[in-house]
Length: 233
Image (cartoon, rainbow, N blue to C red; front, side, top):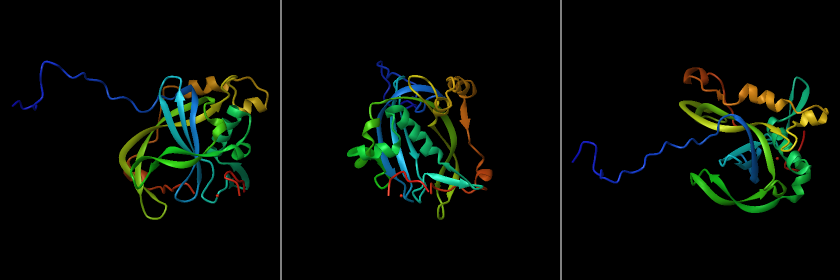
């Protein structure tokens, strides 16, 4: 037997490159295939999106729209603002349907969707409230490819940073799928120019957040901290 193992014959097995699971940073057209509500272990509300890009790849992202107290706003230095995740999903709703999340809440339906189950360690079919009006709607988003450290659970709400890295995609900006405007550009009656600015600054670039384990663990990393699902302060 060869040192390189049994199995060689004249009919060679085709060799293919390992498929990249993420897409490069860029602006992508796509279709929303699913959008459903979830909860973190701490009580924060999330919206999980499944988007089929026109390029053929499907991306998944869970975006937190409230904190663990159920608020979609935060206060800093006496100024109240919306959580970034709430703004992202609300802009998707506005551009897809002309309605905000509050208006879509009565139109949600319970359906069986595939969700990650921590006990099973895999995707399983489970009931969830689906934001039905978003399904099969077009979407135009700026997506970043991010590299960062993997983490594991620590004491309390802390996460321990590991030396291993992971890559993932995240929606960084939302544009109107027909006019290419941002929400701010539409509200201020401005030309649609930010899309090209974003591409110039980010297209094809990796958002590398990886840190050495020693320096990364010097900072505390907390889990996401629920009336209506999307309530204000």
